Image 1 (cartoon, helix red, strand yellow):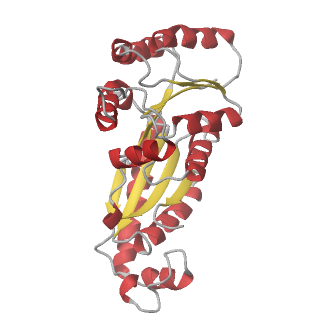
Image 2 (tube, one colour; image 1 turned 135 degrees about the vertical axis):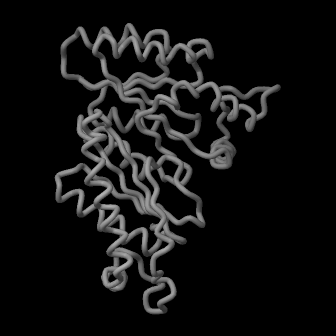
Image 3 (cartoon, one colour; image 1 turned 180 degrees about the horizontal axis):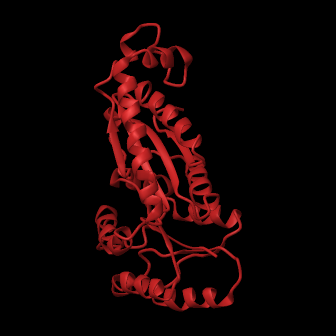
Length: 282
């Protein structure tokens, strides 16, 4: 039995996440009052079945109730009821654009509360959940299809094992806010300056050969592999369920993509559950 708590900002994709979990066999409840979470957790634990559950908790709860969330969570843990908390986030500009496009009303907005202030207020209100999140997913640059895949592979299919997401990105488009570790590969030789490689990506053989032949790249990759080999078992021993590792280069096309693919192969050879996302690639 698993109990996943899905929370996050309005417009960040909570409904998509819950629907994906429901399609994957979870029994889902949206907008569960925080004050009922303790009783619900005890109920499903006492039922003794193998059903997986997911509940949505968001800013429609009263602020005082949300403030009690950490204590309720600790009470569940004291009773041996483990939970997984997933928090979906997005930057303010993305949320403003999404509400403008859909013309939906933000749950906290009103005549005296413009949308931008409602989003800021919601962030503050949900801080007790955000701070306790086991997995944070930034959907600012994520399509609905990508979000469904992330939820399906990292939550529905991961079971109780450590799930590692490897993500390449370009620094000129901003760093990922949901990564636990970020490595900067801009110090490495750049295939962009090779005319015959510029239009390719790190998944192409010519780029891979170019980077593989560089002693500096080999040294960099070796040290990242060593870091993962040393620390992933420690995180897993501490019952960590999710880990996100980002590797960035300037544009997110060549070096970071190559390194992520090489690291994914290394971890999969050790039977570690790995998902790969190349943020800047179509």
